[in-house]
Length: 362
Image 1 (cartoon, rainbow, N blue to C red):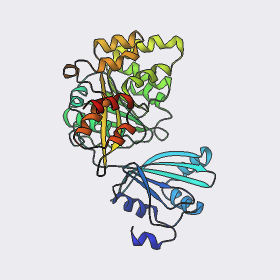
Image 2: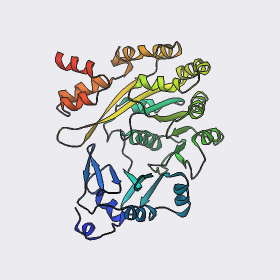
Image 3: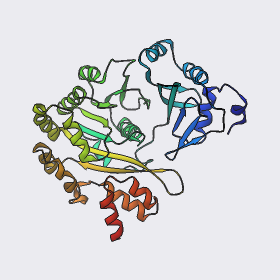
Image 4: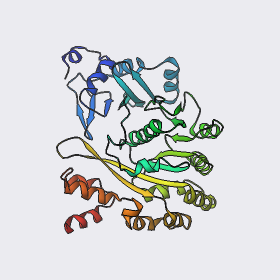
């Protein structure tokens, strides 16, 4: 690691972040009692630096935020924000308190937004984003690349169409430059009080496309469904592992008497669910798997009639015509190309028993 960093007793956080970027890391963690650690290919790796004290981390953490943010953190013991360091990069940060002091997690965000082609995304994505209205969901666990996929989709629209695109995020991650489209990017906490409030007023701001950084509660999901029904293309994220599981998660957020109406709204407004995960690549790096559920009359009918458990079977039928994909199929293709190992495929599978049977049948 950098000799300059090793020599300093109190680490310059900006130089540390710059150094971390050079290793192609996705995250940096600062925790009292440990040297700084970075995440590469899903594994944490300690840097060859001094063990951090509570005072060290407090000095580094407070050097990056304003007095208003410091006050919020001291009141709530949690702080989410994003920032850009000139000539270094853009980052998403979370500050939190532990029994020993402040902890910090930094996520590296590319300044240059990748195109859909650069990340080898499914070609059907270019067709999905041409829709004038409806709901497109990109789901997956934390660190699965949801934000990057969504940013690539919005970038594709920006390069081709003249639209007003409103993003509501906590915090704003990728910053878009106006090319053909016009972007209004809003940071929850700094620019608006909540996702639900921002969505309510977004409909009065003449949007064509709306991105909701996270669909956390019934009020936000309900507003998103209404926006999708009333002539807007809405993108959103949830922390779910599979496409059918996403439908259940949305419906279960609502009380029993509301679920029938939500199923009806979802059946008519859903365009697609893309359930994404990142898997270690054999030899280093990561590769994405993308399970794709695309709405059609059969899918809409299953959602409306509360037969979500049959969606997976529907995803397996006539795939050349429907363009749907299951995660198991993605994993098998990656295995056949020797891009991932069998152990990592099974470890990351949503349906390991199905996957093992297919592997044995090859």
